[in-house]
Length: 38
Image (cartoon, rainbow, N blue to C red):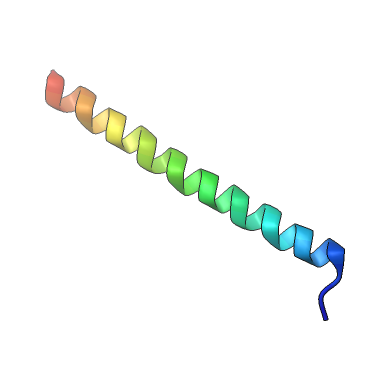
């Protein structure tokens, strides 16, 4: 049974995890570029 509260919670969790993964990938990518430039 879906309540608006549980749906919102799931959506927020997915957005948060997605943003976390994207930022991790972005930071590691820029870090690798900086290392290769040095």
